[in-house]
Image 1 (cartoon, one colour):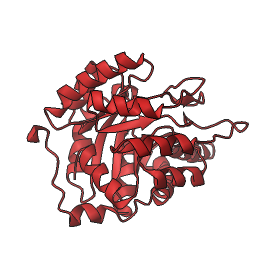
Image 2: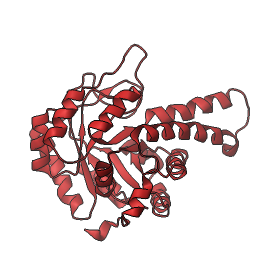
Image 3: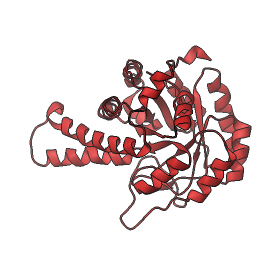
Image 4: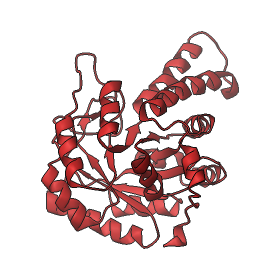
Length: 299
């Protein structure tokens, strides 16, 4: 079942769990996320970075949308880090039910302006919008970018930003970074910042850069009030680690001989994240509440 982010996270907020947003870069990763969600009866978000959409091409998401719509598990297909109105409109035309506009590197007022513009377009057709305040770090091991020094979200700015833009969800910066952390860096999340933001705002909160952070810190963030956690590097790393092992010991070249074990390795990581977010078995809640499939024209 394809739903939008409001439908997805409203229930996650009520039931006090988080939903994983897993970046999908090809058909193998789409299969990993959908099959792991179905096997564990867990809601999931299929996230797509603009560079991933460039690689997979628009036509690929005709299949992705169809696959999500025909599942008994609720899915959102979400544009991750949309960088301008053009990339947002491309996602909408591909059938995405949710988008993120990332103006976090802009001055505060400019971030408000571009985010508000996207909200005004998207809300007319029932597409959910995520904005971002503060900056996510960059470990240097991912295409998703980031900055060398994290700028933490100011709780008082979060209130103003939400009020002036009308966003549905807010990505907050509390010390995470995109990618896998080098061995000499141990991330420490600012739970005090998260708690302050949570005390001031009522919309669902998002944690970017969820890979490679200590499980206990992610679990604590979910307990405080994070409803969406972005995961990319952790499960892709597991996929390609297994792929390298297989290719180093065989001359096989058929995909059906190489990829099954890689898919299983990645699915094991996705399942572990779902356990951490307390989302396993939660798809039943959406069915029990009779959540209706999302349609772009419903607004």
